[in-house]
Amino acid sequence: MGSVPTGEALSARERSDIERAAVRAGSATGLGFTVCLLDAAGDSRGLARRLHAQLTDSARAVLVLVDPGARDLEIVTGEIAHRRIDERAATLASLAMTSKFSIGDLSGGIVDGLQMLAEHGRQPLVRHHTDPALG
Image 1 (tube, rainbow, N blue to C red):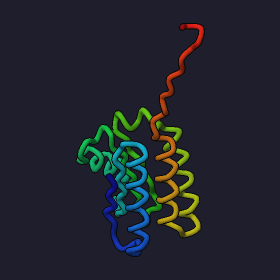
Image 2 (image 1 turned 180 degrees about the vertical axis):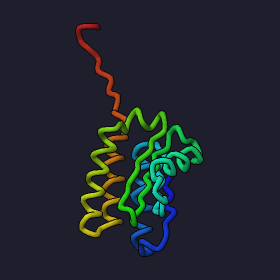
Image 3 (image 1 turned 90 degrees about the vertical axis):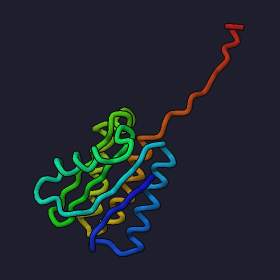
């Protein structure tokens, strides 16, 4: 459920940490999480949308694109994923990520952001309650 195509920006351990966070987010939500670190050549939003459209089951997919050189971040959600991870949730996760990025912690920011996205993306538990008044 998680995928992390990256360049030279991260160590093997940092890539592994991000991969585990993406897999955990996917397991917790039933959504697919993909993280891409690359040079977006000034069009991070457009590139993120194009990459997202290429994902398997893009309706349930969440793509996080980080362009470390440009200090740019995009989060794209598919139709189903967007019902649980709305703009507000994506913005909060973005703020958490960029806060860590600003102190030089790229992988920590991504891991924190994935955790926040997963918290917002969890399906609510459905509890059945028998009302004694209904018999």
